[in-house]
Image 1: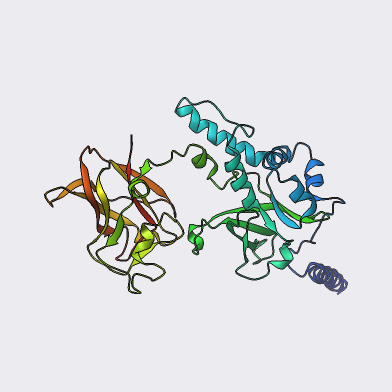
Image 2: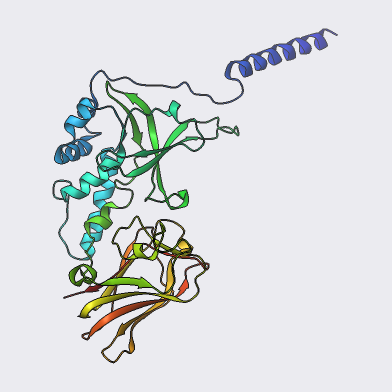
Length: 367
């Protein structure tokens, strides 16, 4: 009997301890939000962390953003030395394949550093507590208004949904409304406060520039755009359902603006055409993918030139082509020394499906 009473007493004590522990942590991992505070402006904060933000400060100084970070209210997704080191390493690995000299932050073009870094700095203070909306926030980078997206991501912990640490996601939207086309990175530290800013620190495995750093530096401009050099008029054998003045009409495939496009719903076979005022020799052309669904990209097409006798001469044939990114500009070369009064791009098949879209088409000449 005494043994039974003893066992029951021990069991009761254990149950009481377990109930108290569960009541204390409510059965899930719920970390206390820590918001470090730095007494000073954002630029001073970055300078106060030698060995962490040296590369970031160097880029800020090169592009003249110091004053902005001293007296403007902003949110910074802070890049550490590791983020820049990955980008420079990728760049120089690529350059070495072509036997080109290495480059570093002090030699990379100002314009590239400027446009890319401004994606990481957002106007206004945006802490993680303001991102409770499921869809997050659409925001714009400073200076150039590049569209970015910020979202909240709560991780799982010990089998409990949303019981883990909170992470803020920063996405380069690539000017697409579809998040499947976005490139997203995560933070490793949140809500560091300065007098004029909030700082979220990016994971050390993020590559500065969202993988655009290398491609922009080694980018080779397309050959001379003959539409601009000689003028003329563009047309299409089929028009969008809204007519020639609709927001996605055929005229936008000739305007050179990547943010506009020509869209057709299930057009079947059709063509784009450019008529020059005089016969012109072309030996290349460019196509730029539009802002959203990859399946609408052209995959099979051919190019023709109109000769003096009124015959359409086939100049180039492409099959199973693929655009890997939205707003991707591709150059296609072909052999030609003859001048043609007009050029026609015959669209045969789309990448996946029946609908068609294209941001831009140009005829070009490579000297």
